[in-house]
Image (cartoon, rainbow, N blue to C red; front, side, top):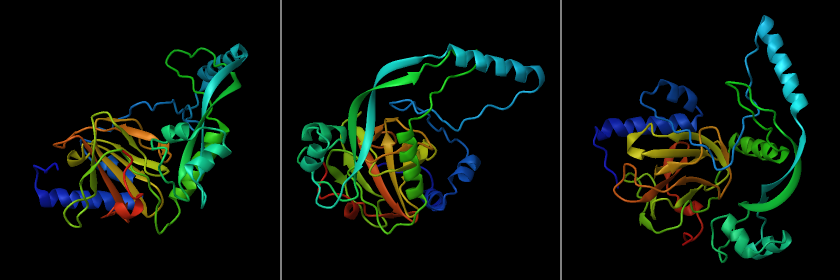
Length: 300
């Protein structure tokens, strides 16, 4: 386990304050006031354009030129047929199994397990979200060439927007618990000890996938706290957060919506003496034992 080289009491106080602020959704103000926050902004595995991004209005002749350029781009656009990979999510109901869900959606158990980073023999919990992947042929409007200094962004699919709204609503809701999956395959090499450790460490190999333990919103992705290395914090509801530390590479950024089973990082040893992910569950900002919220045993 990595030991802080700074004043442990001061560092512990800083850490507790950070988590308390995160629990109260005060993250933006906190990070704005912190120095040396080297937030990573890696591109996710699939582009996630921001449909809410807006361009500041121009004035006078510049506004006219901008309008003319937009008209030209619209005229240059044309329908294009493409084969795309579509990801949907299905909520596990009481009594469901991987076999039943696979049969209902006409996929194999092996495929379903692979998409979700679990074993074909794994048990699933009611309320858990499982990823379904399919190929679809769609017709889209081809984007016109970008103007100098500008970028083109395709609108997010309606399904993605609906999923985002569902997760956003969940994040704002109080909950007594949270149903998690294991964030990594591997062996628990350090258990949770109240007052001594912040979570559990799951060992693995450098580059192994680290996945989101439940649906949620990324409240932080960066390197602002040295003791954590590359850190991701995901909020699942108003009461529960999870954290994933010591990663080699982050695959999401602050503000992203993530789904249970989605890869969010690559395992590493940053600011740690072994390759492992430190997985924390925080309730109202305080560390609690992750084991009661996880399935009986890790996959792998």
